[in-house]
Image (cartoon, rainbow, N blue to C red; front, top):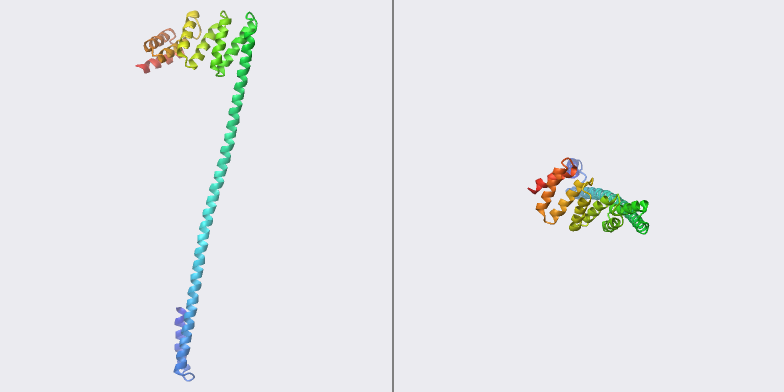
Length: 250
């Protein structure tokens, strides 16, 4: 538009000077041609500006898409790193669990072998007696409570006068308790208290007896046992637990 105005002004100033050279028709014709040329130039300029604006818009759109792709690529990269870490942690944990299982199996096999060897040996041999007890205790320690029960029962039948006899009764009761055989555990603990009234773990035995009685719905007997425990062993850790149980039962 600016170019068009300038051209028209130029024509206006130039017209008087050329009045003697051109006729009115020729002047109008030239003016028309100049106007048409100016319009074409204006249209071309507008088209060029539009093309540049379109190109700029396309460039901005491409830049936005590029930024988006970069963000997605970073997210994928972080996701891949997290997945690799989780996979590594999984295999490390799996390997640790397998090693623990293998170790426990080896201990159980060794304990079972020692128990069998002790059973087949001379019952009057103190060394064999010790090995038999240690084998039974090893089964209990590894969590093989079912075989520990069998081993302690065999030990008690084979070595009734052993120095380990009261402990064998105690761990037998604990193994039965772990197997939730509360009646058998209760009987074992009672026999232990009857045969060995001065047993060093008598406080714990009373606490376990109370637990068995409570599970077996013998609530009055359980309270009586807990009170006996507190009276007989007031400073023991078992007595502290007994006090809490009695308080919770009120």
